[in-house]
Structures are given as structure tokens and as C-alpha cells.
Image (cartoon, rainbow, N blue to C red):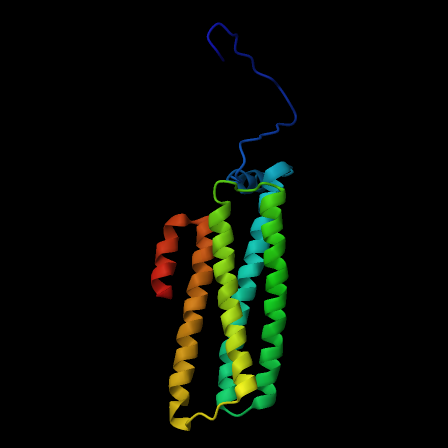
Length: 193
């Protein structure tokens, strides 16, 4: 204690630990493994919910990339019904992503979660959203314009789609690393370039 104060040991059944605004849950897993019954409250609970929603959002971005790649391959193979189905699925993913992103943004403001990094997180979400918008609009253009492409260029288009989606995957990994292991962000960024 402070100088002049007497130290005391309190025998208690429960301890409530509140340690700041950012969720730092390093103790949660070891305590649960040790059989300690615990409950997350306040910002930690909200931050965990927000992190799960961000993960779900990033899953949608990656799913959108995979649908894009499948759509390109279907278009190039003249499987137009399957192509239109991939486009339909991709548009649904984009809509779910937009709804989820708006919910995440709202929670960041309403619950004042991660205030010192909020601008960075919002920028990250907007950039990821732009990727999903681009892959969706690209397939939509294929659907509307139905370009006739020389067959000998098909492998190049497939390669381009594969590389674009590899970048989307690396971006998703980088975004996840931003929340879990900041040092790993650089590795993911290098793979996306």
C-alpha cells in the first residue's frame, strides 16, 4: 500500500478485475482451463463480441473472393448458369458484409470501443469493403457485357483471378493479425503485394 498504510490480505470468493478500455484477455483462457468460473463484463465482453463480428466480416470478404474466382472460371468455361449463380451468391455476401460492417462501425461509436484505434479500424473495414465491392462489380460487368474472350487468354484470366484472390486472402490475414499479432501484419502485407 501507500506509505504509512497497513497491508492487508482479504480472503474473498470472487475478484472483479477491471483494467482499462482495451480488451486484454490473457488471463481468461488459463483461468478457464484451471476450472475457475468467470464472466466477462463491460468493455471486455463488448470487445470480444466486436472481434467475433470483425472475424465474421473478414470471412465474408474471403468467401467473396472465392466466389469471384469460381465465377471467373465458370464464365471462361461458358458455364453461364453456374456463373450467374456465383454472381448471385457474391451479391448476397456483399450485402451481408455491408450490413455487418455498418453494425461494427455503429458499435465502435456507441460503445466507444478502442477509441485510440477507431480511425484505423474504420479505415481497415472500408478498404476491405472496397475489395468486396470491386470483385462483385467485376463479375456484374461480365454478366452485363458478356465479353467474348479469345480461348487462348483463358489461362491468363484464371491466373489473374487466382493472384487477385491470393491478395484478398493475404489482406484478410493481415486484418486479423492487426487485432491479434501486430508484428505479423507486415508478413501478410508482403504477400498481398
